[in-house]
Length: 165
Image 1 (cartoon, one colour):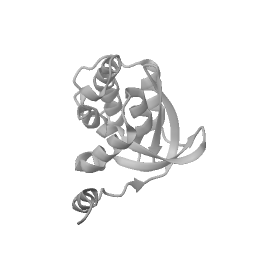
Image 2 (cartoon, helix red, strand yellow):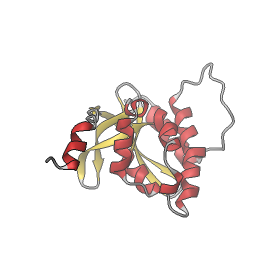
Image 3 (tube, helix red, strand yellow):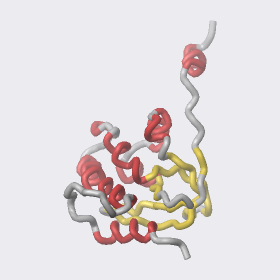
Image 4 (cartoon, helix red, strand yellow):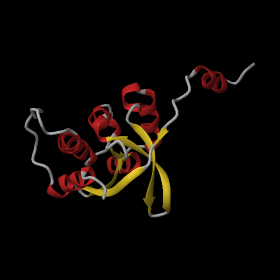
């Protein structure tokens, strides 16, 4: 008789591999009391460290990574990018900022404890629109009103979008 966990593992589809990209620029994006690591890649996309966001919100990074990989639209925005960390250069799982709102919308509020619930709301209401606005060309796009951005956060996103010299 087979082990039930082994049988279950054989029935679950394999998670898609995470594509790798190289960072052209890396910055710290301050938001609330958190310093989030963000990077711009050659195509001009900006990504934020998944681990940093999960730590800031009290979420389990591995569980969120698996959720992103199982969600086709989120998986499109997942990359493994070599970044400088306190422990040296490491490949870091990052989410494209254009997918940030979708990822945050899928976070189950009951998984976020106490005061972190307000922080999740702020990430949804302030960081996600700011990140998305920063990634869009401005010509011809009507924007819905959003809360005023934190100046240092907005400046950090803008800096990532400047051409590398």
